[in-house]
Amino acid sequence: MKFPIAAFLIYFALAAAAARISQAADVIQTNAGDLTITPIHHASLMLQFEGKVIHIDPWSQGNYSSLPRADFIFITDIHGDHLDKGMIDKLKKESTVIVGPQAVADQVHGITVLKNGETKKFDGFEVEAVPMYNLKRGPQPGALYHTKGRGNGYVFTMGGKRIYVSGDTEAIPEMRELKNIDVAFLCMNLPYTMTPEEAAEAVKAFRPKIVYPYHYQKSDINAFANALKGEKGIEVRLRDWY
Image (cartoon, rainbow, N blue to C red):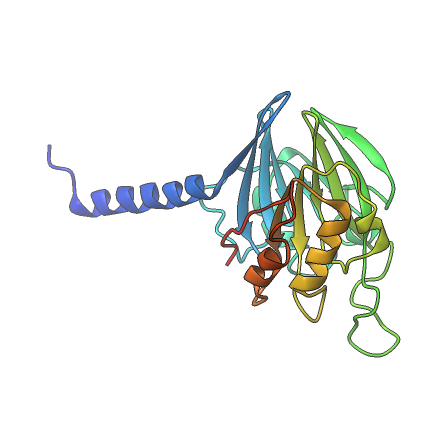
């Protein structure tokens, strides 16, 4: 039986898309199996661990067509590039657990609320909500883009590995004081967060083993990488988030 040419074209297009997603994923070995990290877009990423799918700040600007739906969704803030209700609805299942700060819970009902400093155990991993906020940058004098306590960064503990997701923040003292971070996702874009050079100085303080610049828009991530050259024990991983 002849197979229609159009069907072949669709098949190869889907295969190519799947290959791109596969190539984008990084695998971190833990003492409980592999942790797979898939950069998606801007501040959106996916973690897969012990059979669970964890989406962080899913945004409809990313390509989710070949990605699995979520067992967990973590939201950092209320801005539209972090809190996208339509994308949450597309990714969630009946059993999906959605986690965020109170400001997110005020807009999305039925979620698990974590405040800065709180830690919670989930199925196979643990999460601590950590501060994310601006020190000086805001839309006008006396106002900040992100106020302390409104949003969450997260530190995931999975199979003995600690993964830090910064959310939208400047190089705050709480970031600099982080300990034993294996993988960090660090934002850097003006005017909302910080420069690549400021982010690099923060990395030198808390010294993650692996760091990904993300949420960087048009920032020069090579400047970030260059600022960390020669820093022993810190690997900078540049990925295409756009």
